[in-house]
Image 1 (cartoon, rainbow, N blue to C red):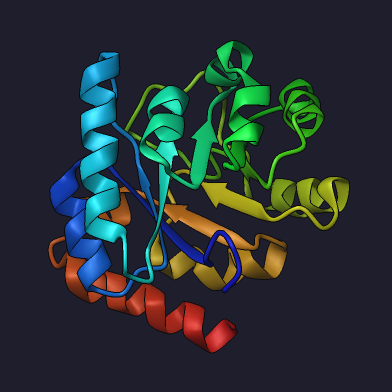
Image 2: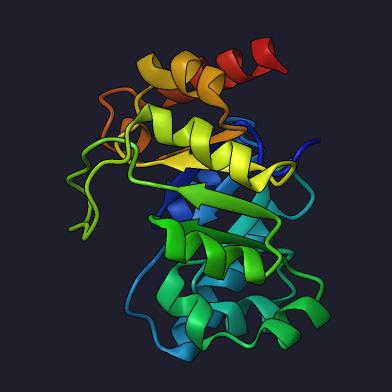
Length: 202
């Protein structure tokens, strides 16, 4: 299977990890904030216990030390996290690395880390977190994909299922989805829509 999968939900709890794993999601990012080292290690360990033996690949956001210690295989870092992370230790642990980007300087920084994928966002306006960056818009996806070549490109930020076809057509290899799943009135049905769309395009 390609990594990351075309549908790439980002969630903040073990309950969501378990729910998405049972629905057959292939790539799930666990993004929790403000944990100390022991809390981070606990939640990463618990999430791996949920996904081990299933088709789901668990991506740990931010907590690279916990990812290394717990034996995770996938890691995602924002720019601030990347600046503070020990890339040598991450690579020695065999972790795949995805990196967030928002502008040209961040893309250069990301590419210097030789990432396994690059994320571009926010594509649209998002209310989930305060963003220092204006929405990128769909044309930026095409530009970014030309610049990174064969490295997978993940689009993130305010994306709903109705945008998927256009975003894939613009050059994205994967779409990271947050509120379209976690704030949906019927999350399971929405996930099945995404999985169906991804299967058709595979």
